[in-house]
Length: 135
Image 1 (cartoon, rainbow, N blue to C red):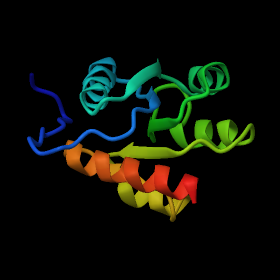
Image 2: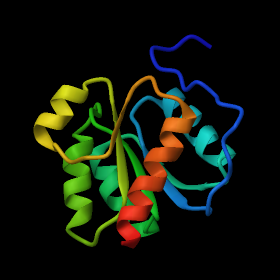
Image 3: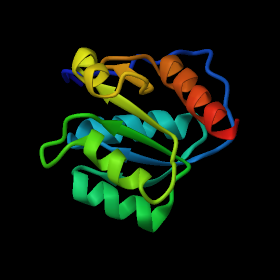
Image 4: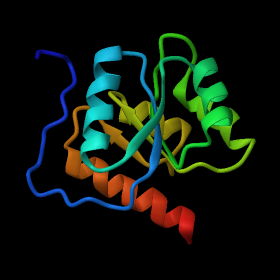
């Protein structure tokens, strides 16, 4: 499968506490691939949205434990979606982007992964944001 973004699979990734995860990604193939990786880690996908408005509505409806959010969406912004969602309560989140400099200019402290990334990097990011939320 040829795409401009691939997740490289690591053999040695141990399962963690299962989370209900919302994926926000406007590329359907990438959203599906990311969902498969997260499910392979033992998590459940409670929602998958491809635009800002859908992400905001789904977060209210499904109350995920974690969000994995693409920064650039075809309709709206992942950053703006997270800002709106956080008005109703904090939800740990990880941004994924092809433009780390642009994201860090907007959100310097954001947990983010630059595409492409390994599933072990995603696992470490999940552990960081969940650990920070529990602290």
